[in-house]
Length: 143
Image (tube, rainbow, N blue to C red):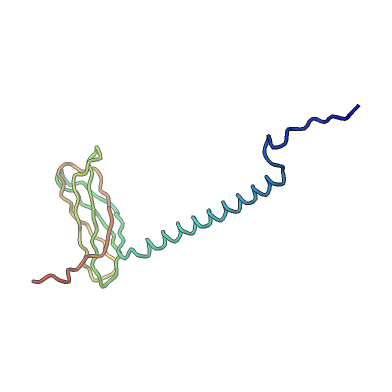
């Protein structure tokens, strides 16, 4: 009698094991390269964003004074030879914005801690620092 072994039909269930291992290795290498490129891009974008920010600030506290006013404490860091502008907003209990203003910091030093007053249209329950930047100077302005 002839020895009949049960084999799968050729080409029906994919390629042989050696070809699959080679393909898996290529996919792993391609994934590692793409992952390293993505990680490098994220690091570069983060460093360049932080490096470009010359004026930074931190909201250190706030006090709701009345339905029309909230006092906000800011710690601002900036170059000593430039002015900084920070935007602060106040929100009501339901999340609606009830006040927003820009505050200019012209102090001589490179760090200042100041309390600013923000006028509101309704009672505020929180304050948020939206961001800071260097104050723009109008080169073409006349007095």
